[in-house]
Length: 402
Image (cartoon, rainbow, N blue to C red; front, side):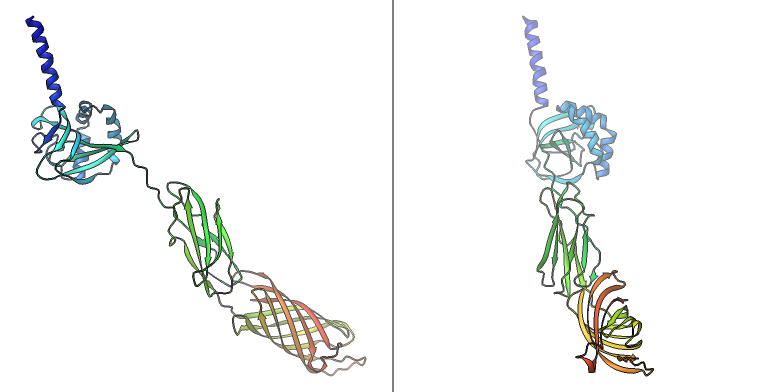
């Protein structure tokens, strides 16, 4: 009977001791039972403590009832973000590791409440496992590693996509095409679902809008002639609806003013009396306004067939109006110096006659920043013979503008 009573008393004593080890504890002082000495002064000290005492920390995790968390702890801690925090009176911790009087084996106490009169300095970091985030705090004065709380791993914050855009040219003539290339855009944590391209005038009004939902993200805009400059914008939208910053991809397109330059004409002309000519001229084109140009040309007409009229030297002055970027019409006066007999009697006398000239043309090719080629029609008639057909010539030619 006495043996049975002594056995039961022993069991109760063991249970009581075990229960007291994990009973709720209110701490009012730190550093009486430190896990680590000397006190921590920096993040580097904390990392050194974990590296040096990893075996003791593993024992502590086992005594705290979290042995399965230790591998993840050691795997993630080297790259964990460590922050300095303050723990206020009344804050609770799930468990804390310590050594009695700073010596001996590692022990763990659960359900710890800080009951001191003031907050204490600590270092904090988190470890994730199976969708749970374990936040740890380590008082700097004693290094007692403590589990602060457990919560779900928060959903990552969606990062805005980044727009990267280039233009084929930032200074072009109105009516030309500008190519917008946003293939360099990216989304660090997802995919791009759409890129919206906009062309805005000087008043910030949308002139044209296009979008691509698949790569490559490239679009073209024909730039109108209604504004001195335009703005091209691209906005990248990711799969979660986040948009890139408008300032990422905003560039200005300036309408280049027309410039004058050398001109060369070659062509064929037919005189209705009849005669056929091959002609060539060179000169210069000068802009008076954005659409109105004056041309001065000198050259010659070489008769290749027919009995009436002869070869001639010409000096022409033309005024052309550009209806749009490609089509122009105009007219002017010219000097026809040569044999202009139109009867059946040959003569060696040279005549100088004034011609009235009408022409129209269309731009058929342009090399950006280089030569332009236009196809034109030209009619010319002696000024004093406007009602006569025999003195009229109709030509077709190519104009090269350099």
